[in-house]
Figure 1 (tube, rainbow, N blue to C red):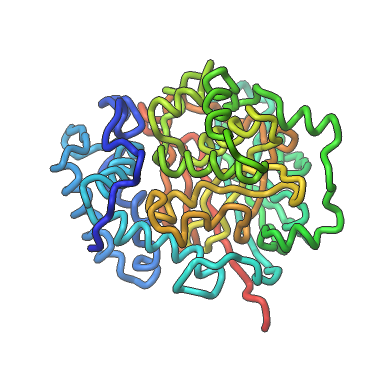
Figure 2 (figure 1 turned 90 degrees about the horizontal axis):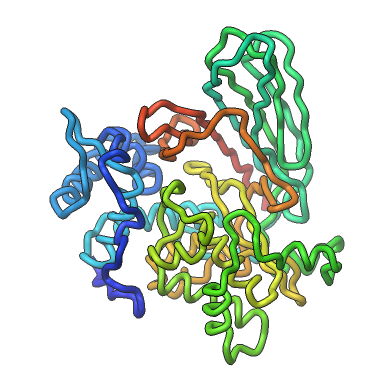
Length: 445
């Protein structure tokens, strides 16, 4: 394996080396489910090629190696893990102890998701030459319904594709497994199913979305005739406001933003100073949301030294807003056929480019910032995406089932795509799960 140097400025250890305080109460996921979780981004192509046994054996060996090296495990007849600790230990041990799994399996697989979209399996593309592409997405959400008196309504929500300059020509078909009357309401980014409670414990809603997507690149934005050149006063106030969800611009965030922006001569240089800080000084991995200090979530992230895609986007947006640069959080799905995962990224308003994407998936793709060719892969450009939320205006809101106080997000491969499950960390019951299948129709040349 190629020697990996430690990124300059990133500490080898800190108060929370795995991004969580940990504890046996969260080590509730059986080893088999952890293996399924790791296979998605580490061995999806091997599984798809019929080599699942080989992929499972390699992943089990890595998990056993990490456990021997200090990854916490709970034993109650079977090995049980906290998936946050597992994924973050994989990355931490790869960067600081030279463990090969992240660099030899996880990283190449994730990069291949990107390059396969570009019909280029050798290097990251800048997506400038990608033609508009037709996609078919089948999205099924199964809700485990809370008990309610008969006649009490349920309001169940699913994310829908948002049409904009890079996604259009949306056609939608909706089906349900619900007997009786169901009222379906569609607004931008949201599908809502209303039904009366009955003697049922679960309900599912499925849609098939066909649409055309474009890569979001500087050339795409230049060709967008509908793009505004400036923000009006109301939009400027909205996208620079200091408090919004996880965005909390505190004196500490202002001080950091001001320090990083010092001596920078343009808005773009400032944004890249923030970007470099997040990639060089922090690590990207899952977070337990119940641990977040909601009075100062961005300061809390800086203290633990980790962020996930949503919280890293919030931190980038918060730093921008601290110096009066408009910025916002975007949510949606990656359109990789083997792993169409849920994802967040940021958009920053640049006067000469409009809303410009910055996606911290680049941290993973660049091996923690070390590979210069991949480091800025998703800075100012994106590949094909299915955007579903543009916060704070277009948002999904309550899903219709209660979220557990402490939960795990688990992914697994299925025959046609992936399953994303929200699981109660204490009871291990599933609150809801999404099955997502993506078909990319290759443009004719």
